[in-house]
Image (cartoon, rainbow, N blue to C red; front, side):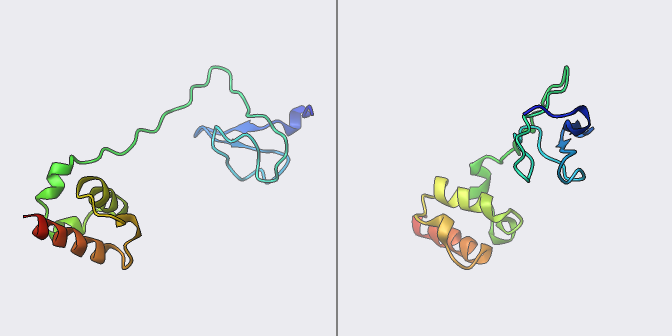
Length: 116
C-alpha cells in the first residue's frame, strides 16, 4: 500500500514520528512499525538520521549496598532493592515480597543479621 505524500509519516525534532492519517498529535518511538490504529505504515526513514541510544542508568556497586542502613536503603527505588535482594543476598522470592519497600528493607536487614 503506497501512501500519498500528504499521508506520509512526519519526523519530529525529538526523534519520534507522527502518523498524518490517524491521530497526528500522537508521537511514536522511532522504532515503532505501526501507528495506534494499526495502519500498515512502514517505519519512516529520515535521510542521514542516526538513532540515539539512551544509556542505561549507572548502578551502584553492590558492595556499597552492604554498608547502607535502613534509612539509606529507603532512598533507592524498589526495583533496585529487589535486584540487590535477589542477586546479591540470594533472598528467594524477593520480587514477590508483599508489603512494598518497608517490608523488603526489613527482610534485607533480617537477612544481613542472620548471615552476620
